[in-house]
Amino acid sequence: MIVAEAKPLEEILESLNGMSRILIVGCGGCVSVCLAGGEKETGILASALRMKRELAGEPLQTAEETLTRQCDPEYVQQLAKKLEGIDCILSLACGVGVQFLAEHFPQTWVLPALNTKFAGATLEHGLWEERCGLCGECVLGQTGGVCPVIRCAKSLLNGPCGGSQNGKCEVKPNECAWQLIYNRMSQLGRLERLMDVAEAKDWSKSRDGGPRRVVREDVKLDG
Amino acid sequence: MAEEKGKLQNLFEQGEFVVTCEIGPPKSAAGDGIRRHTEHLKPYADAMNLTDNQTAIVRLSSIGAGVHVLAAGGEPIIQMTCRDRNRIALQSDLLGAYSLGVRNVLCLSGDHQTFGNHPGAKNVYDLDSIQLIKSVKDMREEKIFHSGEAIKRDEPRFFIGAVANPFADPFEFRVLRLEKKIRAGAQFIQTQCIFDMERFEAFMELSRKRGLHEQAYIMAGVMPIKSAKAARYMQKNVSGMLVPDWIVERLTKAEDQAAEGVQICIEQIKHLHSIPGVRGVHIMAVAWEEIVPEIVKGAGLLPRPQERRN
Image (cartoon, rainbow over the protein chains, first blue to last red):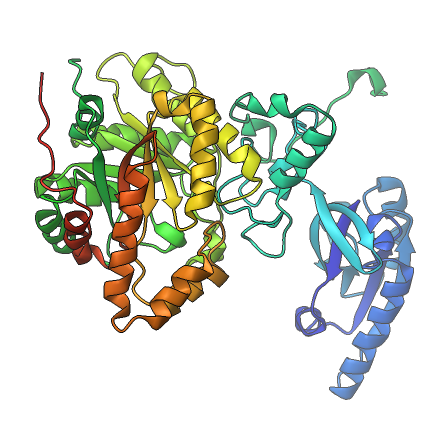
């Protein structure tokens, strides 16, 4: 899932300077699972903002709505009838959701309430970690199912570097991804595969050329 | 283009036990210190290694420093890290360095930027050190750029170095990774500072078993430690460096800790010299460059050999 976390309340308050009626929109997708932007967090943020503004002598009116997903036009459209008289939308979605709202409502100011962090998973309650670098060309088949692109601090494809000690990366508190790769390959009896020099990655498949697209002619409706 | 080997390669090929040292470029635009160090050190060290923004702290560039070394009559080894340059910049800088007379390059991944003075920097790591080694070799042997495009004339013909850290983990993979570097094209190897002799001997034994000492010139890295405090700091804070307790204790007990540090370093060099497959020693006297002559002399490595040009 996409993991996000709340922006500091002070930063959000500052972005709302001069606004008196806002629509706060949560998202029932990934950010709901990682406890950053679901219905519950939306309600808590709304009360906190109202209290702070009340204390500052500048009361804020809030309306709340949590969409099934903010990255889907079908759900985003549901907000159309709730925009009258509001100064802005405060979105608790990831960066995709915030942009979808902005694209769909060109006349409405849209602000983010979260910082979008990474594609990852829950390790334990209250702890999330990145697992995928979204590089566009998966190498997990060569590295025993451990991603060096995002889990190695230097994205080495022929690691580990000289900073790996006792299973730890020199960049604390990370585990050394290449120690994990080494362990997996040893366990599976495939250590010899690490002797091949992995070739340089084609980063043009990653983020370096503007927004990437996936096109599937076979599922397009207008074909 | 005529084959033009540098002094470092010639000395190795002559069978000499090579001595190199390290010069850390300054955090300024002044080259006079590098020239002064070179003048002072060149009777004692066969080549000077110029670090490339080591520990990710901005300094005068390794190539710029290498040109100062050349101007002062020294033999430079420039370090080239993958941290700050993509494949375009790496190759461009290599062309530039070679055009200026630099013949030796040491390829490394580079210290992570969070250790330096610009922790908010974006790292590059477009290539890793092994891919860089391969690319420098391909420029020389295949006369191609990384993309496969032909270098039509005046290809850079670097003598290629790599680093190895026998003290990092997983230990068993360290020798195999060295082998990968040699397969990719590394001709000389510089190890991380050696303090734990037992572990280094085990590393060399494994390397000899795989014949690596005959496929590349392995130089043992040493570092004189100035004080017990510095030794303790390295023990605790520097990843991939193992400083045994006996060194800390010996320094602590010494009346003159710096002199004791020099003495330990001399003893280590003598020991390393006796290990089969060790073809030279690299002295990393960081911010203590002026001590190198005393160490080389103490280790019985004077006078330095002349290169025989064919």
